[in-house]
Amino acid sequence: MTYRKVNYEDVDQVSSAMHFLSDPLETEQVGVTVARCDPGWNSRPHDHADNDHEEVYVLIEGEATVVIDDEPIEMETGDAVWISPESTRQIKNGNQESAFVLVSAPSIGDENGDDGEWLLTGFAG
Image 1 (tube, rainbow, N blue to C red):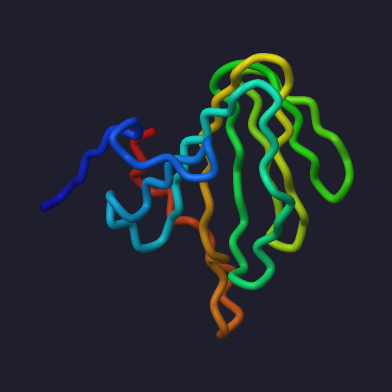
Image 2 (image 1 turned 120 degrees about the vertical axis):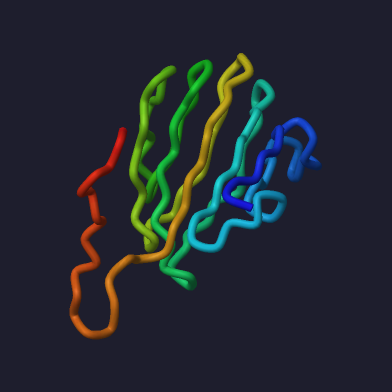
């Protein structure tokens, strides 16, 4: 099969906000999560130093704060923030519901010193 499709609402919600899509989509190199955050919801502070995953948080609805290494980053609809694997991160939602798409992936460099540049030739996007 050349594609897999899932609706995030059909995926069990974890931690009262997170819909982890990587398992039902059977991804191998990228993690995708939809976070529908109720008013006042906070994620737990964490990092990805152990698995070397960088992350991008894209706020697709509402307003929220992402705290990165104790620095509050105010987010509004359409904002995206990149987070290094070593940085501690936490979502702190305000008084209204918000929604994020969270994307994570391992480092693309390899042990031979190749910088792992993404191949963009022919990229239709």
